[in-house]
Amino acid sequence: MKKKKNIIWLFFIPLSVLCIVLIPMTTLVLSGYIAEEKVTSFLTEVLPYVLTSSTIAVFFYHFSVVRLNKVLPWKRYFIIRGIVDLILVISVTSLVISLMHYIFGGGSFYQKLVELKEVNAPVEGIFALPLVENILFIVAIEFIEVLSERNELELNLEKVEKAQLQTKYSALKNQLDNHFLFNNLSVLSSLIYEDIEKSDRFIQEFAKVYRYVLTISEEMLVPVEQELDFIEAYLFLLEIRFEESFSVKNDLDTSVNDYLLPPLSLQVLIENAIKHNRISKRYPLHIHIFQESDRIVVANNYQLRDVPDTTSTHTGQKNLVEKYKLLSDRSPNFFIQGDQYIAELPLLSQ
Image (cartoon, one colour):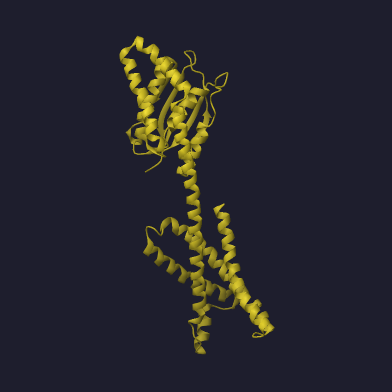
């Protein structure tokens, strides 16, 4: 949408130049100050020059400004950017004038300068109007780009705020989820009579899970190290609940600790595996977490339930994809490879 709007504006600028030239010309003709034959001469000789040069300059400036905004943003390189823009205007003005004289004048721009010098005509005039025109062009394009970026930032901010509220709501909702509470309290009630030490740790890890969810409810990104500490507690609860029917192999090392992830992203993938696959002594669920290049991979043996889990809303992965869209230009991947279901999460930098 942004590109389409910019293209419309780019066509609008040369048309504006045309109107600025034609409206005064029409007024002068109607007033009798300029003969109609001179208007015909203008339309056949000057107008193609003006429109062609304006269009070339505008599209070149647009391409240059878009590139410069990435390499030399105004906020960080204000003086350097101003100098580069000035050099760009002078260079483009000279090139366009030379090109137009060659196309429409039947000769080089240098020859035109020599002719003007021979009749003692002011050479400065041949630069003045095009230079002013090009300065106005680049100012207009810079202004359009600023407005477009501002609108895009405001739109993204609204999306981020909405996603943040949704994450917070979902996190708070999960805290009070009846199934989650019931399952873990049931495990605890039976465990407390069997193993006091294990039940004590179960309570500690259970509290850690809730504490983490409360802590990150306002965050859009968290360090991987922090997410892994939470997952360790979360997995402990699951391993106690499912016993030998469930196992997790974590092959991540400390090299991933400097990266960031959306909060609860690993939990979403593990929960998704549990909800959609059979888990029993006959069909144990095995999850493998490892790093592959700049991604964290969560793989599990693919053994879909005969009866789908009716409590699943199938929105966990979709929400995860939407979060990544707001936070970066990278996206998670989900696919089946052989007898494995694979989920890949891009690691994000500071």
